[in-house]
Length: 336
Image (cartoon, rainbow, N blue to C red; front, side, top):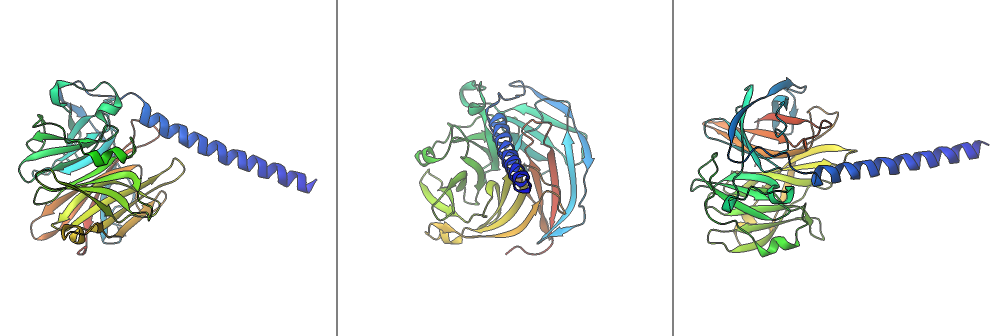
């Protein structure tokens, strides 16, 4: 009898595990395949944002101190899905959503501004695959670049920030055809000479490194490898200096939620090599010192005479089961 009871408990446990995995898979499929909740094309409007302070302020992980953490929410249905982040010179943050909208906000403000990304040719894009924006970066010559996956490409816009008027044709690269439709250019960074570092979210090499492209001015493209964080996927990158990137990584399975920040040394690649090593600077998970969700955006704020500040944002997938988090981190020690 005891053996039979143990056997039944084992079977129930196994079914419970399978059910949890199936539910997690269905959840991920739903968040990726649903129609986009998109702001009206051509409109630019203010939306209300509520801010809920979260735990962890003052705690340190690695060389970072959490200055503030907040959950952001809005009655505007197209608010959310923040998948890329950049810092404007005036202190505002510009984010893009995986439904192809932009959100401009000042940290701590009760309102944000939203609009829809203008696609080249005036086509607003009818399905998520047309508008799946994942990363945003500013170029030294005064443009804004946005990386889109599913249809892997980057778009160029005039100026740093809205109104995001298209400037030139989309940049397609043959090498991206090997990237999974929903695992493509999740991270984009622009170096001081205008070169692009474009990192695939889910196209690891046999030895576990991250597949990426280095696109130099003039369009010449070279395949490179970026140091990975085991068990994590890269979701955004920001330029620290001429030879280093900060890369944000996430582990989000529906059963487990964690994030990490790594420092990537591009010097070997810029000298002609193929591999850029990385090392983990910070890692945290659900239930730990810092809040965490589906972390997807990182931006660096420069400060004269001080170490930089970082902002991190999460993608809530327009779901009530997830949150839009905004974390402000202070760099407490040199990162190199």
